[in-house]
Image (cartoon, rainbow, N blue to C red; front, side, top):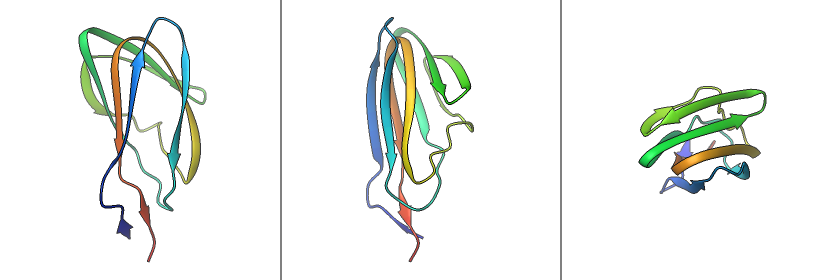
Amino acid sequence: WKYRKSDTVVRLAATTEQKRDALANHGRRAVVPTITVSGSGASVLLSYGAKSISSTAATFKWADLLLTPGIHDLTYSGAGSIEIRYQEAVLE
């Protein structure tokens, strides 16, 4: 595998209104990203497909958020900042 030189980082701001954002994996390798929820009183609800998870301030991997090659919709709400970090790779 040839890895992209830098991680792909998506930063989101959760509010009480439910929002949707697209996560793109332009590589050919599936990846489970690292998620960091931060902020004073942070509490978020993440939904991907039929699965959901809630989190307070923490850094974790959510196995159900498997980003195969392509575009994936993530829905989120709550309070706090969300950082999603992953490294794309292609087969060489």
